[in-house]
Image 1 (cartoon, protein in one colour):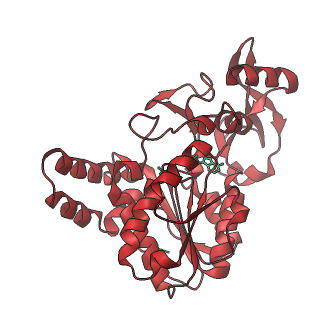
Image 2: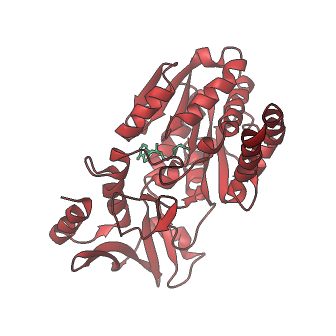
Length: 355
Ligand code: SAH
């Protein structure tokens, strides 16, 4: 049975699915799910992420976290964590760059939250020189100082969509038209979680809600506020979004999210405001939301690129220059991607970010 047939049978039995339920099935179905079955990253996969573009990204993230660790008195041991580590490239670059920081690697307890068995295997290979622990749920984060990065993790969490109808909302649902999946609308209902959005929307506007993100940020912020540490959340999105950002990518092309369940990567833009609020509720401070290009420039990516390029010739040289541009230029990833830092009330924000 294909995943599509399975979804059709499920909808026939129990009715239309929320977009979150549909996404969870598509991404995480134990046999047929997107993340269960494949490595989606890289030139041959469906999308390319910043750490796969250049080693410079992970190096600067590593040095940023290490500087925060030094600023907070080098607590040891501490947890060095990543959410959704993909191919393990970012963590490997972080660890390589921070070898130069005395004591950091020795004190780091590498902890990875990863749902995909296929990617866990690739991560294990990328990090075979180190001792790492994989956790299944965020509640398993050890109760210790925590220095964490999440790059393109939150965009992968399932969202729900609602269309405003007076002071209530109709949820956008995945239903059936004979044997094809199609979007429809649920019945009108109040949504207390969307009360704030009644102030900046009008009838017919579409808003998105990612409730799965909240417990993740709450646990991370709980560790940071109690034991010290810092988190860097990097993703595409904005403080608050308006409109449909649910999208599917297959082989670097945008496709209809309902066309081939389990075959395409499903994501949505990240709303950073609710993440910042959850962090505050858990006793953490958050930085200003900062464009990735600005953040990387402040951390010295231009000097790093010049330095790397100076030792290279031909294609390799040109690739470093192109990667610098791709990561930082406002018309490439520089503006679309944003960085939110979380840090303890009594400490300075991570380098490159402002309170
Ligand atoms: N951070 C990596 C990969 C981004 S892709 C990079 O920048 O290259 C998203 C990652 O999050 C993948 O590793 C995916 O398997 C993981 N992921 C997605 N949903 C998850 C969930 N609910 N729990 C844990 N990991 C998840």
